[in-house]
Length: 231
Image 1 (spheres, rainbow, N blue to C red):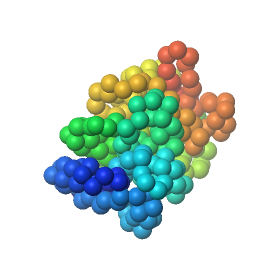
Image 2: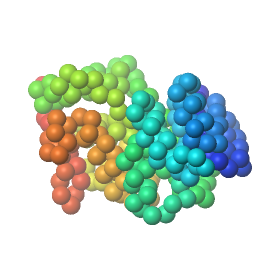
Image 3: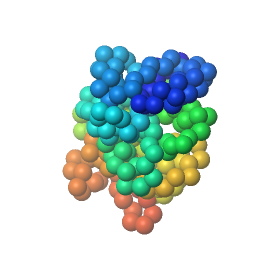
């Protein structure tokens, strides 16, 4: 059971999402404003936040950005905005995924489950692997990543992107392949949303994000891990 915070100024939507998530076995907290959401997130351990972009006091992007200053809790955004730039901006400030209104409650529950699964540690028989002569170390058991000895905190989506690339170092993954592998279900949205997650990942793991060497871009194709696996 996960603790999910649902943030929306519409009581009808809050109650609808709460009922479906509780039916799926989760404990649900609710907030109607950005200020209330920030207060709950600061004082209560939550496993995931469902966050509406349009709130009466503080914009959802600003709420997400404030939460990201201190926490890597997964964020699923609800948005009525159809402009791709708005969705991309939401991802760039730290959201893991988004659902556009009007939405299917069953789809929302599916996406919540997929994000939570990405954030769980795998079975204890996995082991740490290092890449690039120890520059990058990924420990799946502890869900831990270090870069040059420095511990890095990743969101579930950033973690999934890194694992997908590290599974076959040097192999190019297309955006379509990568976003579908990471999300764990067929995604019919715009493939370039993965660019936002890669951008956030690079900020955390690249020695110089302006000249990436760990997660490399293959123009017109996708991305690859630029470090070889240590033997």
